[in-house]
Length: 99
Image 1 (cartoon, rainbow, N blue to C red):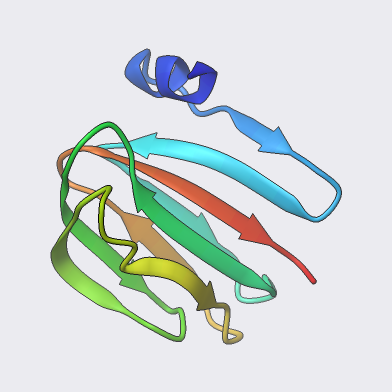
Image 2: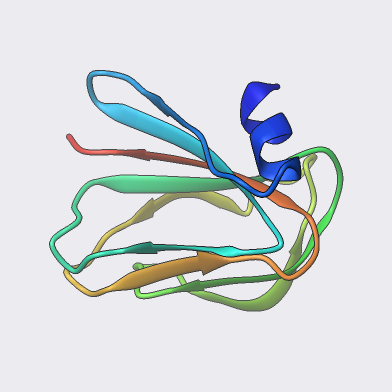
């Protein structure tokens, strides 16, 4: 719940573990450098998220709606390109790890 509170306040918080990091974005975007590696999963948080785009990863999306009950954004992969995950309306929980 803390990442959601931070996003509602206009900030961005991160939960960082040994191999994974978690953040939450609201009506914004998160970018990754081309050197990023590993996997990334994207989940709608607190309801539907619309206008979701995923660029520069193995599986891309353009202006889609994500629903918390259907895991469309699970286990995507970095492919050596700059990447961006964005949402126009709603919140996305983003889990990324390097293995």
